[in-house]
Length: 591
Image 1 (cartoon, rainbow, N blue to C red):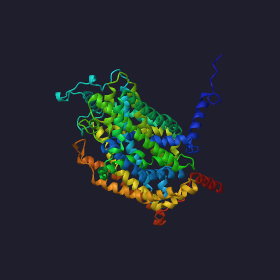
Image 2: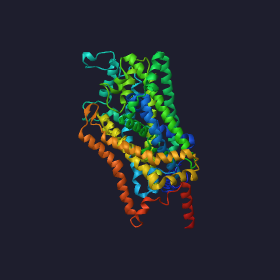
Image 3: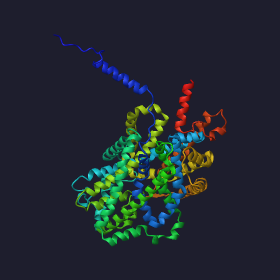
Image 4: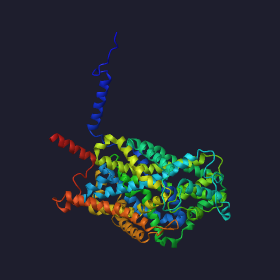
């Protein structure tokens, strides 16, 4: 009997399966656009905000500024700026995102079409920060992989030296760690020469893969990742603090804490230093990330009637408490390093082996040198896992802003989320290639310096003026109190009015003037090339002063027959999503 040939058109044939597969694919591609998600619960939303604000800056920038200005002295302007600008601006961002259930590109376009570029400037800021922030995660992954070797390659027994005899002293362990980071990891030969390093490209690629995998299903996946990446750093920080208390002499331990945060160390004369206030403002602005659009984006996935003011206070308190805790851990650890390796805190932050103002010396030089004296690799593994978790959290917020802007403006791409994310990974790795060169740290520092100062202040100032002068403070508080039903006590109402209408914009304007006037002319004790400064200011002007006018011209053209007043008024789309959806359904029924 001849073998029965399968009919490709039969219900059970391979041909039928292929046809059904094609039909399914076409239905998926041409069918209804997937709806915008929301957080599974309020906890995931708050944890995602906390993960976004708590990052590498808490671990190294805050302790550095505390040491630079005196712990308690620095905390005074830090607290003032947090109350005058940080909290009110944060509350404003999360309220607008929750109200419209849309990212910043739509919020400001619907609020005042002439300022539609403001949201895109925030997205551009997020992308720029992401490009250099991920490189630091690449360094972290490289160190994490090396922690599993029997002998740490940054220990003095693993490296050959060509040091003068005068440098062969007790701090040789620290010098060895410095040489490893500079010559083996970064492969720095000259500050202005570039040669791409394969191991850095690979680690940065893995870091991008981790971040994008966390976002592959949007907030459905990133919300679950937050449970791990937010909680793990706190566990490691507490363990490090407890371990230091158990291993150090108690007098040294207590003295290190007194040096860090003693009220008796407040220097009243120091409070008149403009640089102190500029550093405090920089730390608050960068840590909270208010001008990157991340909080507007993350809160756009909230349910409509969450208490945004209460959430803002909780998130900011967690951020501040984490910064203080990180400072405790850093200062206690450095005190132990001073005993073990004959170095001082000044050697780490201001000594001849520092690499600039980024703060990488603490994480990639001081701590590895300290861990190299241990007999096991448990602590370095935990430490770099903590740094990785801190960085991934913040990166998720940065990239959620970018992907939300993409999928909100091009809804048809929501059904192609996976291939779009893959294309983004390839594109971003290509952008990171110059930063993976031997002198890439100087490019990282360049981007960090300019995006963390002038651009933050310019965009923050414009944003506050648009919301509270163009749209109106009373209108903003009306949508918060009456429509979202968030209870705001009268004293808090007047506090928000005073800060958002007067104190915050004046503070940002004053700091912007100081930033421009006090621009550094050197970097890591080397003259800063004129070309670097040109690139830095060009980037600042393109993002903060270039994107906004371009979109303003576009808005003027599209509304040329409707009068200029409409450019400064909210559109009929400045409504909550549930109202917009009900109107769309009504319009469909009418037609």
